[in-house]
Image (tube, rainbow, N blue to C red; front, side):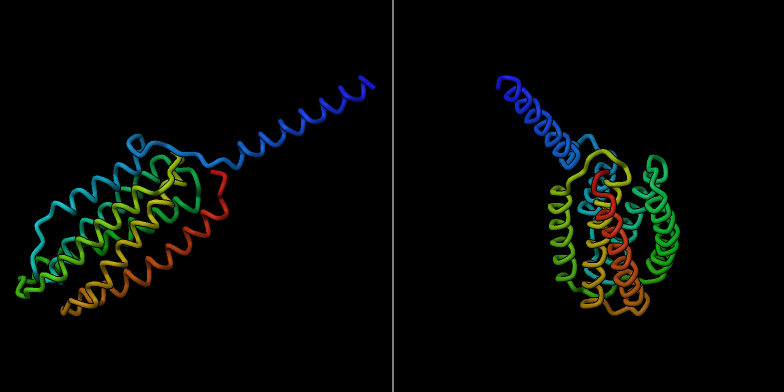
Length: 206
């Protein structure tokens, strides 16, 4: 009888240990935002954009903001190439660098040739609201110190903010070059968000 009780007790202990192991596997890992290099890049970009003096011309304001926003994405992508090891996320980083460098050149060309002349302060007001909202959402993201995971998590929010600003350009802007860029940003970055979400769902344990 005592032997049977001991065997049952040992079996219970083994089951408990196995359950704990499963819990450890499925447990969400979290890293302090202040200790995370990818988050630091994101915060620095947001701080610089919030500090910018925006002209009331929506096309110029969009171009100025998006140029800095793109540079933030490039900085994050370079960090992914430096420290990440997932082939799909590294390929995504290379694509982001290529595409957004090309768009930065287009934005710079536009800014050099387009003198601000419209006065639409509503655009800048709405743009600032988008940035503040994006900053709060960014600070709610779960990051764990794995470069590939953190790059994916933060790039989704980064792209979403770009899409929101591009939609504002379509509402308030007038210049065809910026309207076309806004449409392209919405289409391309929405597709990339979908691809990154699919990757995250397939790599839950990173």
